[in-house]
Length: 405
View 1 (cartoon, rainbow, N blue to C red):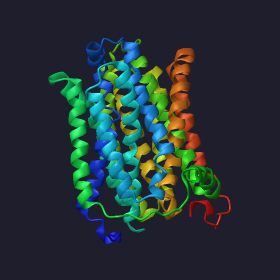
View 2 (cartoon, one colour):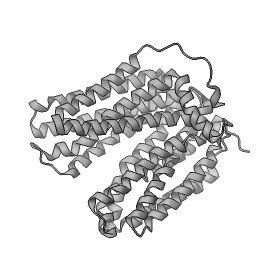
View 3 (spheres, rainbow, N blue to C red):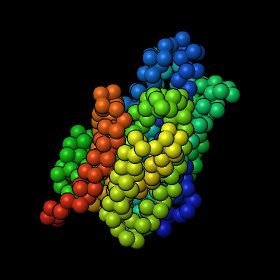
View 4 (cartoon, one colour):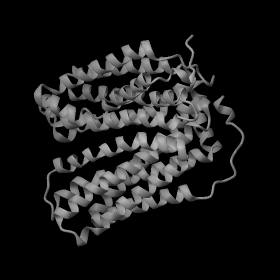
């Protein structure tokens, strides 16, 4: 059995974690820019072809809830490799799908097993020391953020030059290469709990009740993701209307500002190690609130100037959002070393719920009351996140959740 001392977390292994996380999470987004090409090839309407990315996201949410906790029950090395192999099969299935129904089924499977990314992050946190955990998580999350950012660009180019099927084949090859290196390089990480699967899932609720810091992190990040979801679910529609009259490709171009998030991740990690993750989380929420509040200036700016303000705000809120995310992950990973995968699952489920609610409320408000009401929603969510971080902490529970052992 391989040793799992922190000294094994070399720069090359951190790079492997970052690359693997980015490649895994990228598989969630490859299909989005290719929908028109897929629809033409499979003779599916614009409405029905949208089922593929929808099921991919649903699969990812289910995978976080149902599969991510397995990292505490089994050797994370084996979990990572098993999910990697399953993801390869799913990507190959998508590449050779003869119909939209088959592609949709494989899309669900891609989402399920792309949660490989959320096994790698706790693995890196486990191998890190208390003094550099924030920095390590930040570096690994940089890979994840770059995977999200670059995936749509790459898939659009590959689909235009060759075909959407080639893109899925390339994706499968990338995961094969990662698994081959991971099989040789990843150390064994022993299970931290003996709970059965049903009890493992039930312990998510126990962890929520046992750790106020987990609840604070999950609620804060969920509120920030609600603002994030409201923004991206309404931006394209807002820019299509007067006074802008811009196409959806312009709204998509604002996504390149997400590069700021990749820059924030390692910086936030280092600051969390030096000054404490609680301060970094609060500072990130403050940046998000300030960035969104600037958008209230819409009535006083020209269309061109306001587009520049949206770009500035996008960079700002993404920087703050990702900084808060790294800080919150650093916080929860320190709560119970035996339950890091489950703690991560709780945080991510809260984020998905927040983003979904923000998207739904944002779309409704835009249709009923206009853009400034959406800005109000985003700003309110960010202010509530700040209030959550500033709320006096309840008396810390000193007991360790018995269900996590």
